[in-house]
Length: 546
Image (cartoon, rainbow, N blue to C red; front, side):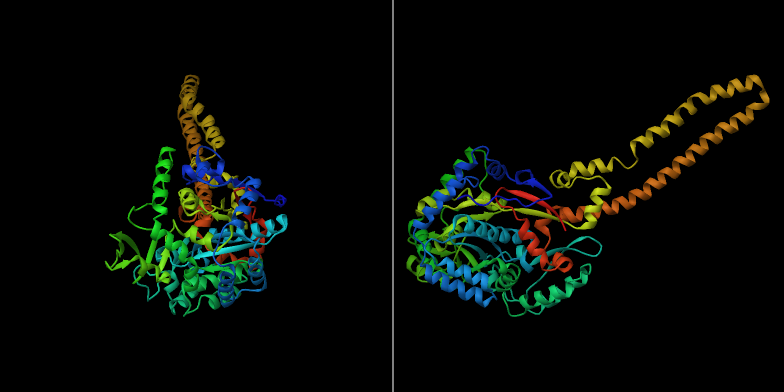
């Protein structure tokens, strides 16, 4: 049975492939062009392939399902999960269950908006497919909680009271170099950060309530990862989202078979090197760099560091500590998968039918088909995530006032702004002024000469009249220009604010802004509105007026 059709009314949308900044590979993949499809296991628009893949996923071996669900039940209960999440965990134990998965680093206060959209998408997909296929399908968010690039995750973007894009940055006092986010504890500075953000935002009717909830989840003593998990479940628990916190030592024990094969058999590197050659031949780039002597695993020791093959063992490149194969395998809790191996780990744990990913993720998934084949695992469908630009009423008003097309402003901003800059003085006004001024300047000397020939005493009055007409026209034109400049100043302010709304910091809104400021204005019902607008069947970027 096919997934239900999408009959909801989306006011405006942009094809995903028309968004600026996509790589050639990602654009070809979304448009079904070129050779991109050769690097993926299934067509994300062909539902018959989905059914075939579902059978393969069900038949494939996985980690012990009961142990997995018990661990996830503990994790989610500890983070405040509600009945819907627990019900999905119960259904995940069914041998016929499938999972729709996404993942992301644990960004401050939930990270940029696109992280929320990814989570909403897996919830919506799981709900729709559960009904359409009459089988349990669970939405899972894989917390990339061992990511050590804190610069990517310790900020939250917002528009301040002057409508300028700013970033709130939380600097944890105890965060060592390359320390995984799951080990970074929140200190009192997190409360100061929340207070600062509240003071910077335009006041919203729900601000007190939202910040009270934020303070309960992002509180001193929690880690960045657990705070993210709590906040995510607060936002999406009603839709049954399951959080998978990957740093859990118990999960590492379940991941150990993938770690063993990577270290013993060196499976991923030859497969990716061969794929990278094929990508280059097809005119595509390789998103992930492959180091031939470095397995796609980090060692967790004084941070998170690469290991390298050295003789019949391995060496930690951070401190030159040497390990035998058995020593590494004997401590799976001290190993952490890199981006190239994380999907294999994820899909060993879960019966993954589809992964919802953004442009960069699609690019590196294109390198992994051979890795899945080397491990003998079915590669999931890679589904482009839905995206959105949220337009508040005043931004919508400015678009209408200046006759701007929101879709064009997003897909071709520079052209739209160039056209606006050239339209300071309306063309019809410039032409009308010239049509009056030019003939007077050209013909008045001849008229004055003819008047002098009739009566020489009229020469002075004629010259004075001509000068007066010219002066009057110049005064009028000056007044018109000042009026245009005043309007332009007002328009420039409006357009600057509009640019910050749609292109904050020179990037798509979903990549820069956090959901907290929007929740302060529109309250918790905003999440339901966004869920209702998620249309995952075909990749689109929606423009939603709030």
